[in-house]
Length: 113
Length: 113
Image (tube, chains in turn green, cyan):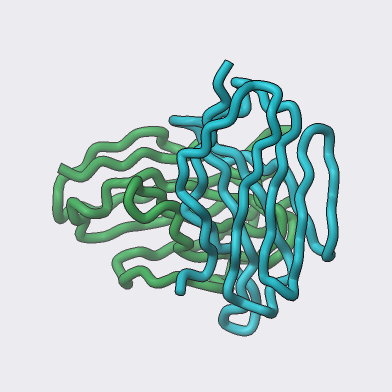
């Protein structure tokens, strides 16, 4: 059974650009959550998608957005990148909605220069 | 008060000893509790979940939950150098009519050979 796949693994972008990250969950899982991980802030919840709808979101500015497709694959977009957006972005796949066992992908390491 | 609090450590124990990791949470309505292990440069890996008061054992790992005290812990028996990692406590928190999973900052564990 394939695990959670995130692409790309690494990205370098310039301030002001935008970026799109992709996550394919475990087959049969319908929930995808996104997290930002930095050394100073730890794992911060961005949002959760279930059945193509955003069900919950964390305290991040509107520059951070996402969507989910009918096959449960999800994308996260960050517009007008800032240096502080440099982080590891992790996607977590769950079978059910909200606060259940989650399985993480390998993450996308984003560096903003 | 942070929603999920852990001692950042580092916690250092000799090989073969019991490592005790602790976590407190603020939301009395939380129903699900998880422990993840994260090796340096890797993504978090789920090692235990617990939903009811008391102890839950899985191999060398025991999770303990006390909802009245809003406290959850992880005991690692016969600690091995390969257990050296950051351990993340995660709790589901009521939000927006549902739940989201919030992570503590993690406790770094070193097991000395």
